[in-house]
Length: 261
Image 1 (tube, rainbow, N blue to C red):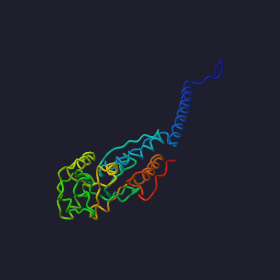
Image 2: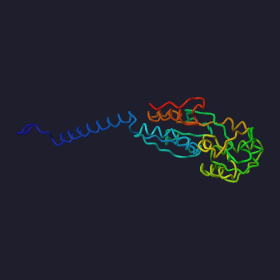
Image 3: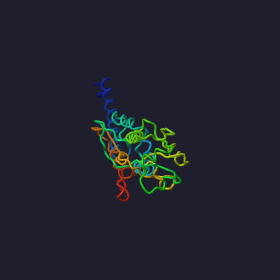
Image 4: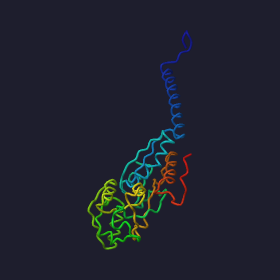
C-alpha cells in the first residue's frame, strides 16, 4: 500500500501480466479450435499408389478443396511398403493401395474389387479379342511393368510364376506416366487396374481387356488408416467423400455421388 493507493509488488505485476497473456492465449486457442471444428483449418496427409492419382485428383479433391478451402492436403506417392509405413508410423492419415498386404496396425476402411486388366493400344492385335486374354498370350507380347517394389508387379510376377510362364519384360519403371505412354505408343502392353487409366479409356486412347487368371480377378483397391488412431473430423469426412467419389471405390451400380455436406 502506498500513499496514492494500492499498487502491486513486482511479483504481483508479473502475475498480472501473466494472467493477461494467458487470457489472450486462451481466446486465441478457442478461436483456433472453433475454426478447426468448423473445418476451416487443418491438414490431412495422404500416401497413395501412383495409379490412384488421376482418379483421386480429377473430381474428388476438386470438390473437397472447393467446399473446405481452409483444409490443406499433403499428398505423397509411394509403393505398397511405403504406404503401410506411412500409415502405421502416423506420417499420413489415409493410405490408398492396390496390393493387399496384411498388417496388425492397418484398418481397411474400404475395399473394392478391381481386377487387374491388360492395357493395350486400340490398334493392338489383341485389343479386339472377344474372350479374356490368357497369360500364355500375354507372355508373347513386349511388356512394361512397375518395378519389383510395387504391389502390382509382385502380383504379376506371382501369377506368371504359378502359370510357369515368363513374361517378355522390356521395360521396368516406377512411373505411371511412362507405363501409359509405352502402351499408347504401341510399344507393348502393361497390366493395371482400369481406374488407373480411366481417362485414356474414356477417350479411347487405350483399351482394357480382362485376363483369365484368378489372382488378377481377386485383386482389390484398399483405403487404409491406422488401427486405434483417432482421425480428425476433416479426415473422416474426406474418407467418406473419397469412398463415394473415386472410381476405385465407388459402387458401379450407384448413381451420382452424394454431394458434400
